[in-house]
Length: 497
Ligand SMILES: Cc1cc2nc3c(=O)[nH]c(=O)nc-3n(C[C@H](O)[C@H](O)[C@H](O)COP(=O)(O)OP(=O)(O)OC[C@H]3O[C@@H](n4cnc5c(N)ncnc54)[C@H](O)[C@@H]3O)c2cc1C
Image (cartoon, rainbow, N blue to C red; front, top):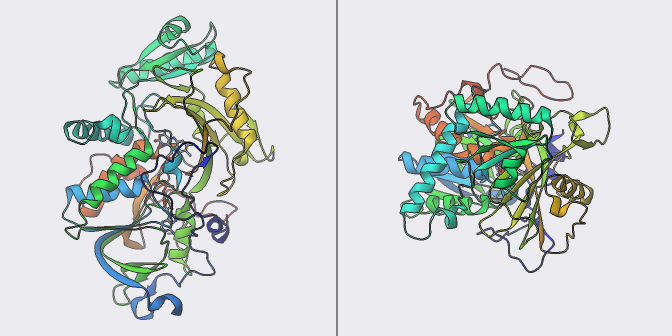
């Protein structure tokens, strides 16, 4: 994908709403719908020696200079969590910059489950998922012990437990195996027959051959509330000069010292932010294009992250389906990696499995009692268009599990909010959390696909340890850059060292 094309559609801060009556859950009113990230043609020469670091005439006079220890690019859940961890656990000062506003990227579309049910013990992601969940639990406990509303109110935190549901005997066998493996890994997991599931969750039907795996300790957050809480924590360090956030101000290029070659600063559309210790690039699905702008003309690294569009449906005051727990169909597990399977529904080209639309049912109730239904996955660049045919497929898929809505048409004009987000997808299914080999003080933290909310706190801890040079709690080698991508300039992904 061409970087210029990727940035013509910028992060859009607002979910698409069909109900004029309901207010956005974001604590921050979107300020602009048309903020653009850097276009290649307009980007400043990246990696310029400092002596040549002249912003364009129009912005040179206005560019404001500030100095920090760490500059974080991207105020999604990952970037903000990194800032929070640095502020809480180190004496370093931090600036966060975003092309738009928090929750304008994938984070604002996130459903919010912090689950273990769809994970595999011993897999590359396992340790980070376990650690991250533990950190969320600790944060929720801490918030509960403070004044100003508990974790439910301030984080959207609920220990609803999760049900991974299957409808066929094959899926039940998968669930049985999963239950065994998770139990052996110390997770409390229980296999439920169709009738036990019905007793626990009367709104759900899986047929006589199906069943579920129940993880009573799984939790959920509300992405908007969690971001709001993290921002509040970060901003509490502003008065002592340790925190600054700049929104609607896209990062455009890096400024490098002529003497040492070290990256010294990030140039945005209006500011130059010097970073004494590190620059962290946490710009989600935009990271590939941004790195092109940062690294050109000598492109030495191409992180193959790309946007994987998702729709999420929020049905307000919906009383046809009442849930006691959160739900996910067992097929979801396969949907995180891009390949065709039985529930893939449409493809732009049957030859191109990467464009294939896949839908898997996830269902949660939020703290307000709204039914949140997920989700779709497709490769449509940075399109933010609501695709009604995708919404229809999601609704029909949900109807396969909830008899009360089967064959009931969805009225999207009635109290329905549709959120669109672009998951930062990595073809090998793992995030990238590492320093850029050629630029030892620039670190990338992206590529969490459908796991960014869950993994944000563990990622933040890992990044902090990397910046400090401390041994991490979780092995970070799995997420490293080196030797990970093949040196292939074909139609897709490259990595050159
Ligand atoms: C429908 C849906 C449901 C999901 N449900 C869940 C879930 O239940 N649980 C879970 O764990 N995960 C879930 N996810 C995934 C999760 O939302 C993402 O993995 C996560 O939000 C990624 O966070 P991020 O901070 O890396 O990226 P983003 O949230 O996309 O943030 C990146 C930020 O970088 C900014 N940016 C871009 N370019 C620039 C630039 N040039 N300069 C400065 N800033 C820039 C953008 O404006 C944006 O704010 C879901 C995703 C979708 C789409």
